[in-house]
Image (cartoon, rainbow, N blue to C red; front, top):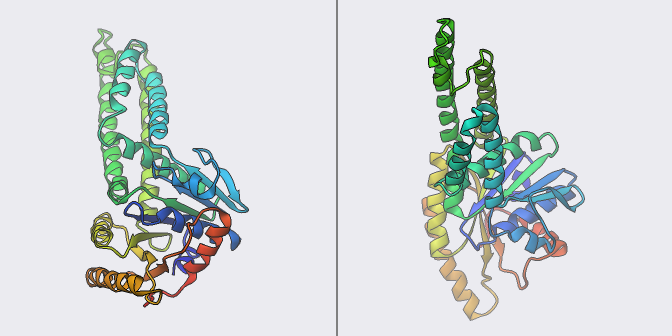
Length: 335
């Protein structure tokens, strides 16, 4: 199910509760698609940085090759926020009067730990990767952070698109007001103060154009990401879980949150399924897992479901990932 669906998509998100094997599934999926001849970018948005541990190499914010046709990036939330604020600060310093540079720095310093800043900065980076990366890669696979963080992230494109549109409308009204003041032909400082202290005749217009350009670019990227996420032909979202009570309940809630954000779930992946024929203990465990999966199927009867077996060894390194990846082509349902 995973391999067949991913082969038909350009963007794949792998999400779910922490500790259920999202990184293993995302990595194996990306590797199998790369070996099938597609150029793949694997992106981790999880601050735990499991990608490098799994592949037994250093993975950072710049793309590095993991295998033929496969590159990877780990997005560090703190570094992403710092880079985002540095970019915003550079833009503000160019647009604002020189004497307000200190206020800009103070505002950015306070913003660093503001609620939602990490998600907003991360979303900017994801939007950039989807917008620009699809020109270079046939498939982008996102290994996401645990459920709650991912659900908030998936809802942000709609919110930030509307917010940016509101900024554009307010900026347009401000520009018209500034033009009206300048056309009065008065040089008593009123127009300069209204436009942020810029007294030169050409400066306010230049500033208005620069602000509008920045906002239009931001809106374009968010709208592109929103269209991509909402298009089941282009994007697939897989929820990975364990056949246990809490992961099942969290999966049901994540599915509801994604539905509210307009995102279709392409499939459910039950990882580490206990065998029924390997002794009494595991047989009993298998039966208990079946109860939890019945709860899952009662709540979510429609998404395709694939079960992956509990393995005797850890999935670490390219050979183990390739062997694990071969299991991704199994039928949807298993006993």
